[in-house]
Amino acid sequence: MRTSVRTGETSAEFDLAAPRYDLMVGLNPGYHDHLREAATRLAERLPERAVDLLDLGCGSGASTRAMLDVVPPGRIRSLLGIDASRGMLAQAEAKLWPDGVRFAAGQAEDVTDLVAAPVDGILAAYLFRNVARRDETVAAVHDVLVPGGTLVVQEYSVKGRLAAMLTWSVVCWLVVIPLAAITTRRTTLYRYLWRSVLRFDTVDEFTARLRRAGFTDIEVTTVGGWQRGILHTIRARRPA
Image (cartoon, rainbow, N blue to C red; front, side, top):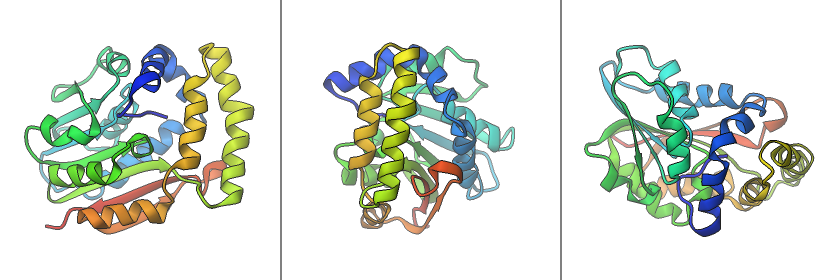
């Protein structure tokens, strides 16, 4: 449910939601498990040496923690979390992190200016449907990977599939939005979540963006349970 690129009222809503954001995602069955699954897909492709990693659209740090959970201790030389919401970053920075983990504010499109040196792996969870200039951002992500580096994207995609769209809408309006009203007294962000998923690329459209940017070895998996066919993990590689 995070985003790294927000403008206007949407940006303000993410900042306002930040103090109770961890509570909301914690009520989503499987949320943290799915992040660890995505991080594991990244860890499987990392070289056998100390690595530099990027969590793009890190939000309150749940995906950052997932990366630390699955990459063996001592293998991470640096881990940078980037997000455009200072409210979310404040939540992330308030948590305890090992040496080598740091956070920075910035837009996903500007990642080439925010990363000092190429990284070995990038996790982008719940990010790209919130990005307006997707092709530009995918190309920038490609450029900050080392040759042979890996990108893992975790994202909702339902467009063009009636059953998935209906399931998503039912869960949002009967579960997610009412819970937001109870826990945060604000529903704007979660109504935006519902709309943004309905409008996001199909999986084929997004993987086509990856290919245009130069990514290869693209693999797509989905999760189990009610989110099967709704939540997808996409792994791709910058050619060596």
